[in-house]
Image (cartoon, rainbow, N blue to C red; front, side, top):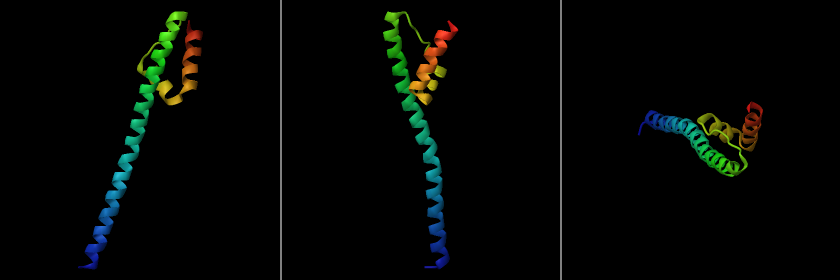
Length: 87
């Protein structure tokens, strides 16, 4: 077998590895944001369910869900403070 063909095959495998690796990282980020968004949505729904008895309501929209998904509990506290300041 020719040495050039072996080096070309190794180089091609290396390029395929790099392309797959570059494509997997954004997919992992998207999956993480989607999972956190679902958890944030459930948390906001639960907070509104409990807050309904206390006369408290947070609007559920994509911005509030993503804010809580990205920031977590501090994002939820920020939404509550903003809700009290705007009313």
